[in-house]
Image 1 (cartoon, helix red, strand yellow):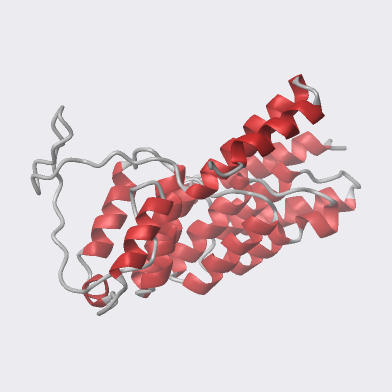
Image 2 (tube, helix red, strand yellow):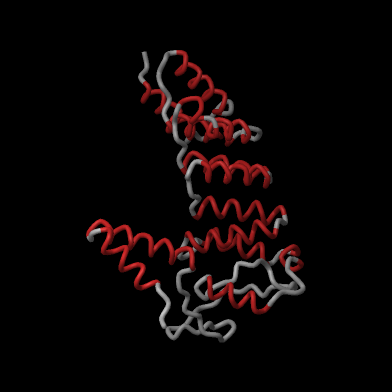
Length: 265
């Protein structure tokens, strides 16, 4: 009789199996192992479902099945999916060019309080760029900007591919409110406006170095100092308030908050 961790080991081996050395696709074997596990009364874990989803997602037509496994693990088995549970599903929809289904995976991630990291955001960027969905590319670029300080080579290539595309050259508003853009830049800390693509035309894509003084060798401009945006500022203020309320009497700190927020006369 096999224990649950032994079933997990079998599924993990199948998930990392050499496809060339396998007589048939490992997905069929993984399904048999999982069925035997359930039949034996061994409780599956998140690692069980994730390994099974990885094997199934690698099958040419298994992406939908893999997403079904991950998206129902909470309802069926009371298990919370993790980031690693979604990654193979997103990769499968990217290979299939199924942008809409990749967006559905990200929506389910958000509902499960799972935040995508650089590999997942790069996948979503790539599938959006190939679909020519300019709004989604813009959305994921800003999510990537907030999540990652410096992108990897693979992610940079995805971004370069988008800006060299015909769709990127045609995406953009012909007219916009300059004052609204300036206000949005200030609200976002001085780094970006997040109002979408402004103007259209071919992009100049090149890799450049920035000097010690912050000057770009490509355009000759100096990099701007960027502050945190209003949303992050509010989160920071709330965190400080929470810490202060733990150390000071609530009445004293509440009175202090009212005092500093009052308008000057």
